[in-house]
Amino acid sequence: MALITKAIKGTQDVLPSFSHENRFIEESMLDIASKYGYSEMRTPVFEHTELFQRGVGGTTDVVQKEMYTFEDKSGRSITLRPEGTAGAMRAFLEHGLFNEPLPQKVCYITSCYRYEKPQAGRLREFHQFGVECLGTPSPAADAEIIALADEIFSFLDIENLELQINSIGCPECRKDYHKALYEYFSGHKGELCETCLERLEKNPMRILDCKSPVCSEIAKNAPVVTDFLCDECRTHFESVKKYLDAMEIRYTVNPTIVRGLDYYTRTVFEFVSNEIGAQGTVCGGGRYDGLAEELGGQHVPSLGFAIGLERLLLLMHAQETDFPEQMKCNIFIASMGDDAYIAAAKAANDLRLSGIFAQFDVAGRSLKAQMKYAGKIGAEFTAVIGEDELKNGRINVKEMATGDTTEMSLENFAEEFSERIMNDTKSALKDLFSSDGEGLNINNLFDGLF
Ligand code: HAM
Image (tube, rainbow, N blue to C red; front, side):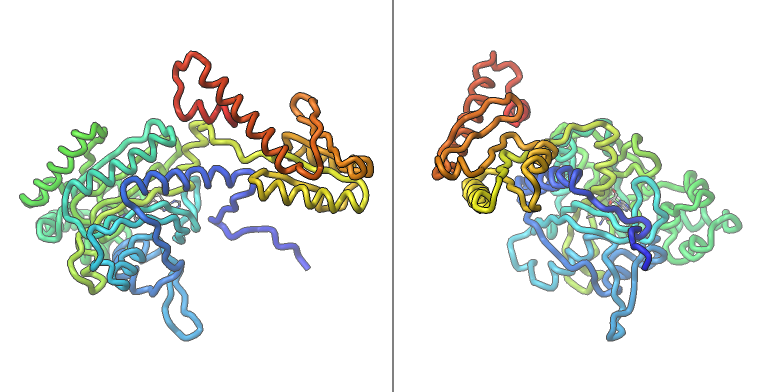
């Protein structure tokens, strides 16, 4: 039988030696979001297809070309979520969260599925960290959410990421804009792709984010939405900018940003890098005041953003970001003989219950092979239990970096070893604080410790 070793095109494995990077960025994002009042929400990986058709929009690339849609065994049309916003809004409406204090602030880390042409930074299964602020029309909320994304990128030390913002207005002021786009693109009917010809009739704004090179070239000279904003939308956008200025968040206004999903209204924004190739948008978001009504609910003005985790990691690797190291094994307890093996298992268990990262041999290896393994996994200390140690109740603990050994009691091993680790940590801290204190901050504090 052939060995199956190929993952599906456009999907990625996160191997154990890299998973700490994902964990670091995910935990950082969740922690930062919680300071802004966001709590995690988890929704199913698949939903009724109609949710995305109505929410994301029938004329978008995502719905027309990219969804993983199938019939389940009872004939229902099901779709793997292409993004997180529609599901979050569905859950908000279904569970009556509009009765809770508003806005409801939710965040999530989810896998998403889009049948796109895979390339660097573009996958068919990818992951997003997203936030949704549900139930506020205030421009202050727009600025707050942008500030949250901005803080995440600063915390992760990302450089040269440009924040671009725009307003794409409301359905009212968009009527004139659609007319202008219709007129403009009608002059290029012979060149537009088939999908865009259809879009021209149904929703000409969607032509602006068509991925075909010909259509995107034509789109470059199309009328821009900011010239068509109604007074209310214009005032809203001006307020958002004022808040951002007050918060000292740098941005550029890019009137060509329209975003690829239909639910957006008013503020839209992207954080863009030019260091990771064509797929440089690391974060995209905006306001979607009409989504709840589109799904059959009441008026729930809302907004949010999502950061693509694979793109973010691509950028962090390109910028050679230092990730915190993976947790190191504190001690490996080797053993010789059946009784010693059981003593090693017990010692490792006691150590773990005291909060120590301990390993013992679970593969039935010779002593020599056990020590080799301890070296490979980078154990900080090793100890060997044999007949003598069992007889005397004493055990030698060797610090691998220095070769120094310390004798400890086998009976109180967990306690004595934990104390040793604690003392080492204390003296590392003391060294750090007794330095001249210059530049002492939480980052070099951790660097000094681990
Ligand atoms: P989006 O712009 O479609 O927006 O996706 C957000 C981010 O997900 C992108 O900026 C990118 O980093 C990442 N992404 C999108 N497609 C792919 C792909 N094929 N491969 C890898 N990464 C990808 C949304 O999804 C909205 N739901 C964001 C939002 C939340 N708006 C309001 N609330």
